[in-house]
Image (cartoon, rainbow, N blue to C red; front, top):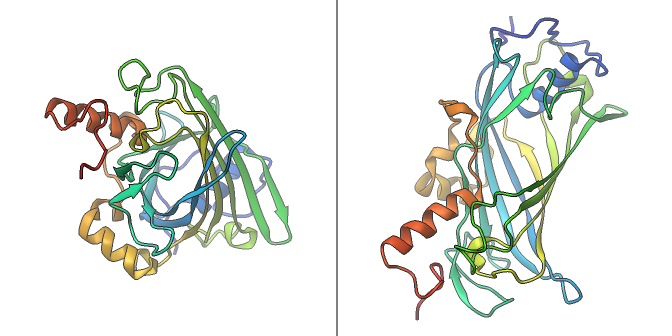
Length: 296
């Protein structure tokens, strides 16, 4: 007997899904992204990050390796799924593949401390109706391959790291980014009523502003990320040894899903880095505007 989380939405079906129906469409997508048993789900994502400088060049700046851990529950009062989520993304050396502590920015020539992406938490909420991220989501069935495409563009006039107060770390006052996902798996597996989860491969792209730790100010250009994400059915045992051991030693909390909803709170590189900049300034650890520059 397969145990699914309780409660579940009205009309929920564990299989034989009609993807044109919002409730079934969301079930399919969440089988790929989460686990209806209520157990946590671990995944990894590996790729690269480039700089895009108008009319100049597109240099590869970093390798990347990320780990995400999540679990989900249905909230009847909110009529949607709470997706408890944490993620860490490491910037890695292009030659050695090792996690960077410091990095010489080839665009400025300066050495800076590297600030990895530490999103704890970065929750999501999936409403059945009435919200920006309500189903049905766009999808294709290609043979046995089910693919959801999700493109999320943000342009919010409240960048926490604004130009006035953070001229070296802020590119603009509007927080602007794009997340481009192709979430895919076996349609047979997703459609199996005896399965609470399905193996998932996701192609993830991101377009974003210069990272605050790069100390690029408002120089024209932006970052481009591309990663391949995959499920870890055996948990952390499926991670490459180096990244598993590094995470166990330095950031073990990212190997466990969040337990508190905290009003769906979301952290990102800008909110986390702002706190670090403010802390270092208060402690007098800045040299002029720079707080991440490596002093020789």
